[in-house]
Amino acid sequence: MITKMKKILLAGKIEDREKVLTVLRSAESVHVDAAVPEKIKIPEALSSEYEDCAQALSILSQLEKDGDDDLLETPGTPTRLVEETLLHNKNINELKNRLALVTREFEDASKWGNFAIKDLEYLKNEGVNFAFLKGSIKNIDEIEAECTSRFFLLDKTEVIACFSRKEIKYSDNFVALAFPRRDLSKVSDEIQTIKKSIQDNEHALHCLKQRYVDIEAHLNKLNNKRSFKEVETGVFCEDKLFVLTGWCPEDKTEDLKKIFEEAGVSVGIDFLEPEEGDVPPTKLKNSIFASCASPILKLMGMTPSYNEPDTSFLFIFSMILFTSFIVADLGYGLLFTLPLIFYYKKLINKGVDRDLILMLILFGVGTSIYGIITNSFFGYQIFGFGLNPGGKDMILWQKLCLFIGALHLTIAHGWKIYTQPKTLKTIGEVGWVIFLWAMFGLICVMITNQDFGMLKFSNKIGGQAIFLWMFEVSAIMILFFTEPNKNPFKAIASGLGSIAQNASSFFSDILSYVRLWAVGLAGAKVAEAFNLIGELAFKGFGPVLGVIVICVIFSFGHILNIVLSAISVLAHGVRLNLLEFSNHLGLEWAGREYDPFKEKNK
Image 1 (cartoon, one colour):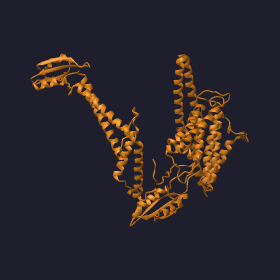
Image 2 (tube, helix red, strand yellow):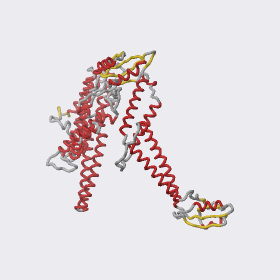
Image 3 (tube, one colour):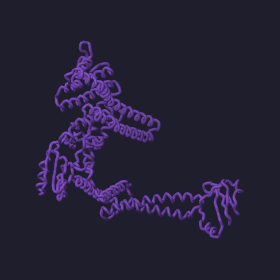
Image 4 (cartoon, one colour):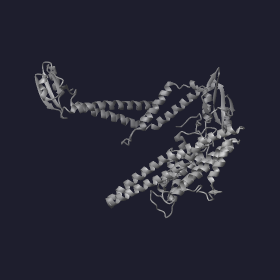
């Protein structure tokens, strides 16, 4: 459920502003809205320090494990640790750039072999000009030099060495090659020196990583300072007073007053009801089961608006059902469930989100139950019973998916009817529910040639299919009560427009639930295909090598299938909730999350 909010107006003396905000932060219950957003200003030094600290943590988090188990913690304050991290990282980047240049120089110099540079320097000092030309010996007459000699570099490049006390001239058929500036041995020595320096800096970073927790705590401290400055500079100030606005849960208002009284801080607080046009933040207060929907909603960035219904309970329930249909295998379900149950406490102690763990366990349990019903265990049939979605029971599973779709959308419309004021328009909304089930009957006829195949009663009334009667009744309700008007022609025009706009979407939305059966069946066929490939490989390679090959094929095939199933859950299961269901309910997911002003641990 969505917690009721009160709008808070808090006034105090400017000279007490910091003290007031400190008490307010300790209350941990007020979502602060900046009264003057354009005046929010964070000191440049604080922002710079925060960015440096975040960058340092990013650098340390990306380090691969060092083979040295006796790493010593680097001493110093967190600020000093950040500076050293950035310095060592800068050194490494510069050294790597230098290494790339020197390595290129070494590759170029190595073509010349172990040639002594000092000999060429001697000739130059004695007034002898020299040049090394790349070109064909056939054109040697085009070179003006006292001495020429042909040789080949180690990469087979043909080179003509020219020596002369006069200026060396040559035609365009030759290109002068740059001779190495340093001896090969010196270049090699520098490469080793650079590599050693890189290793030393990397080792220093690994020592710094031993203080990762301290740097992380420092970042959190800086983040709290930033949030405090945001609130402090965002309040409205006039004369000697400041005014702060925000939102407080209704059940926390008295506690907030009490906290200020106990702190001995004089402020004026007023709590108001949300007005039209206000956008209160959304705080969800749900059961453990309904809270399991939060990981997906956070992943998708979806928050219901304050005045919208909270569908968390139905969302997680339907997601369990959809996941079961999509993953559709007992083996996969147990693979999700058993390790999470076994390591539950360890994962919680490591800080893994409890709601995420419980959500995955629920998905695994639902998938396991579905796998038992369909007799599927890693693509094999191990029980003597089961309803086969790809065999004789295919039509049954298709109709079941359509029924689930119609029921899911009916709940959306029923919820909409329940939460909205009861007027003549409600009759039109009920008409859409009847229209929805009439459409379900039509789709059943198209697939099974039997409308309402899931229900045990006659599909005919007076020789006419039930869904046709339902279409007629719903059409009358929609035409006259979509926009009730004393002028029947205006009412009918509005009804016709609504039917033209929504009728086809009802058909496609119900039909889209067949994807649950289709995707689940596709996954089952993929599992069966890899099993068959593994069995054929086992026969082809023999009992010894065959066991290894079949294990590799099974592992690769089923891991791939699990990954594809997980993607399908996000692509199809989430879509049915956030698109089809939400559209029929009128849920826009345009809310903002409740974020109370408090000191955060992370």
